[in-house]
Length: 353
View: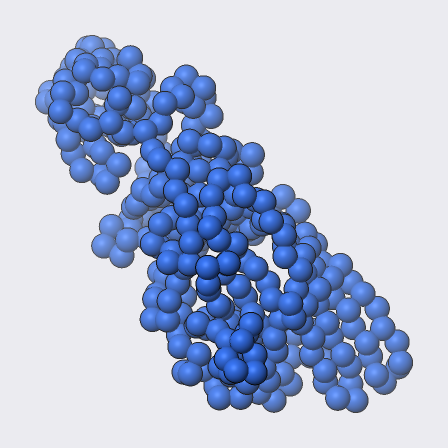
């Protein structure tokens, strides 16, 4: 279950993070690999966003792992490169790298061995087209105009849109074309907590509206089919290249959840359900914070920073005792509290000013 901090934000409005701005330097380059886990979200609150916000996804359980690697354009099949490795004839489609894409098909159209091509620059990050085997024939398919995935510089409050199309002809059989509108809004900034990492991020909400048009030569008829609206939510951090967290929804339901992970620290088990929440006071605090031990629970009280490092430990506290924790010398930020002892797992969060 994902725990959000809407109530915490109302009570403790001061979060010590700084808004970021992203540009082409924060996008992937050839040779970069993004390792991720696909996670399970049983519910998702799309409205949980805003300025100076905290997103807590530490409860995401890893299901399956995967990786996306950005490869050089020249390493992809030669016939795929027609539009994407030709800066003189097709400068708008001259790509910086490619990523393995999804195969798809429709009736007599079969598209396999797909590579998506991307271009980055001072104006934005663009999907310029793809290469694939189409019914067994290697082909180069460009988006015309290109799809602006993001526009730069990117900062909180930005709103933009992008229209793109691509088309495929299968001679004597049929013609397939897809039109896409992308509507972007940078609707949040703040701190994102993941199972093994913490990031200062921008959140981008992208609404994708696509329409597929098909003309069947054999019957001399054509028709258009609007696809269900997809919404992508991406959390982006400085220098990370790929989104550190992405949630895609279809009809409001999460259909894809993937997050960046630290290979050394990712848990290999689903965490034990928490028994309860600790309630430190005051919160925010600057010099001293008090914590009351729950009834029937004794052990050590541990305070850790955003990187998971232990910064304070109070030993051997008995049940129902109130303990004072000295915060002197700690930098401002968000810290986690937990009890190491009997009585299950108790957690809390503290803002140090």
